[in-house]
Image (tube, rainbow, N blue to C red; front, side, top):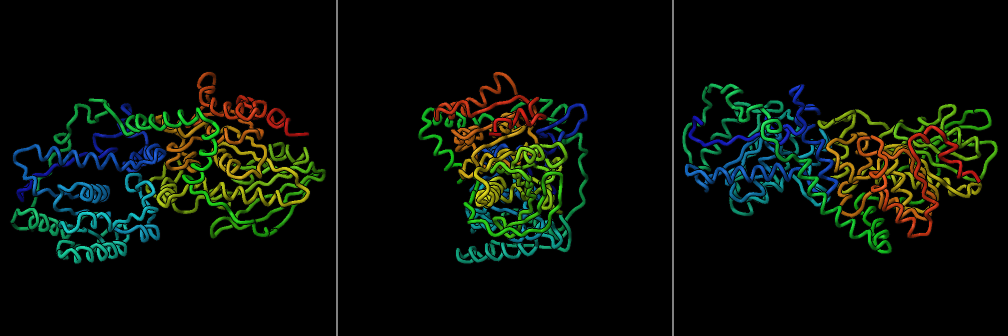
Length: 560
């Protein structure tokens, strides 16, 4: 203000007076910091094949609309500046609104290669749906606006890789040079962490003074900060408790209705719908059909009463191996079960547990550690969107490259199932999965016929349930496919399994709460229709949560 600029500052979504998950009793966010407020609803938006950044971008554009409605604002001299998340908004808005003349993002710009090599992908609004898969990188934010004046403000010890800053600046500078204005692409850096320094601020003042034609000294002046109470615009300090209105959740829920309507129309023609569901699921999940499994490596054996447990690992899709346990009974029925548990290969192996029940009835059981579980656990990386012990940042990484964790898991499950199927003594391969791993088995069984019977225990019913509930269980996100609701939902995938035997017991919503009665019937109607369509209604078994503790009720029909 002292330098003669008109300044508009806004609260982004999830910050200041715009908390999305405000607890009026505790007077704070139910989720925690701003990055969590940004990231938690982002999953619901990404399920629609959209980016939550769209709401940040729209707010920025509407802010410029407001500025230009004022007589004292010159429409030809608009600049945008912000740091960190504000740097993200600056880069986005400047690239997408032609009215922005000068742009100076601070402590955000790097490039995806160096970001992946260092800090990893950041919170929800800093990721575009399939952005990397479509060739988008940070330099493009400047290329799209070239040769308008741009200034990258960077610090050498920032969380955003300084090497990526150099590379992005160089790439953008070449484009500006081709267009005849290389001096319009500028950069300032200082030795510091994530934040402003006097050097970077004064460079920013000089930049805007020059290109917005507002001359004056660029030296920083002393200012008196306004008390926070004076800056507050709502009576309660929060829009949610003062004015109400829409949230990202409510807006996204309305957006989801068109996808729901489209699916409902498609479901009326099951002959064309079900094959299309499998094609959509393969494409959207980024599934890659695995090659024939390599020879497993045997690492040990120990004897139990009437069965042995053997330890193996086999190559997975990428540069990793899948460790698994093989439970082999003395008396076998020529059937095998691949058993998936979100806590890893040992979770169901307790005495009297489900694995032992299968073994006692003659089944060979293979129980693996899929990526992110057991010996392939979460590792050290958490990221800035670490909610309820779940790294959203890992999910963003798969989403950015056009893939999904569930698609990778499904390929590994198929590899393991084919291993079992290659055994001459095994005539049939069945699959059982609990909780968050239920969608993994569902995708694998739909993609490859090697698994002939499926048991889903405590599965959450649908991706639509995630979008329809304000709160969902973060534990489930690794089994969610970005963009899924543009082409299918989990019940559609289940319907493709007909006429194979399918058991679903203790079905929950996206928050892990049991659903019953009419709500349950409405959710599973498409599954029933798929089985009726194949004249296999008796092969679909829906069981209450009480059955989850009794394997005889769950799987008694599998003993023949």
